[in-house]
Length: 69
Image 1 (tube, helix red, strand yellow):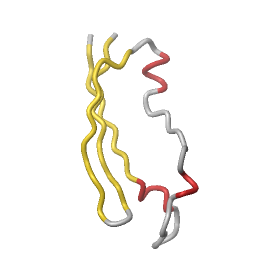
Image 2 (image 1 turned 90 degrees about the vertical axis):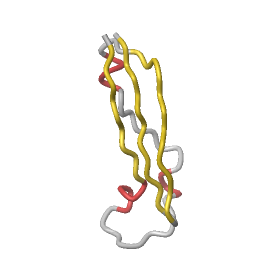
Image 3 (image 1 turned 90 degrees about the horizontal axis):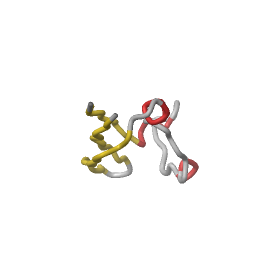
Image 4 (image 1 turned 45 degrees about the horizontal axis):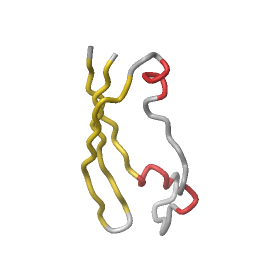
């Protein structure tokens, strides 16, 4: 059995309550475990593709991940 998972990534989400923030350096090396529950449940990643880009100081994009069990 396979399933497709999409994950939206946006560093703008780290701005909190600030309207303008010049850097997200405090989030460098920060790990977000988006597939933690699926992997714990026995799913395995068989394919992954990223797409998106950035504008000015913000970056957005998607990960499309195929899982298999």
